[in-house]
Length: 78
Image (cartoon, rainbow, N blue to C red):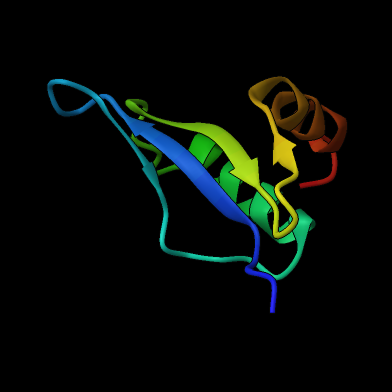
C-alpha cells in the first residue's frame, strides 16, 4: 500500500536550522496543499517554519514554486 502525501519543512527557530519530514500523512494531494497553506498563512503562523516541498505516494514532488502558484490560484476562495 502506498503511503500518503507528506510535507517537508524547515525550522529556522533552531540553530542550525533543521529540515524534517512531518509524521502527518494526507490521503489527497489537495489536503496536503491545504495543510501547507495553513502552516504558511494561518493567524498563528510561525514565520520561521517553511514548507519546502510536498511528496506524494509515488515519489511525485510538489516544489515551492508550484505550492506558491496553488496558493495564489486559490487566494480568493478561502
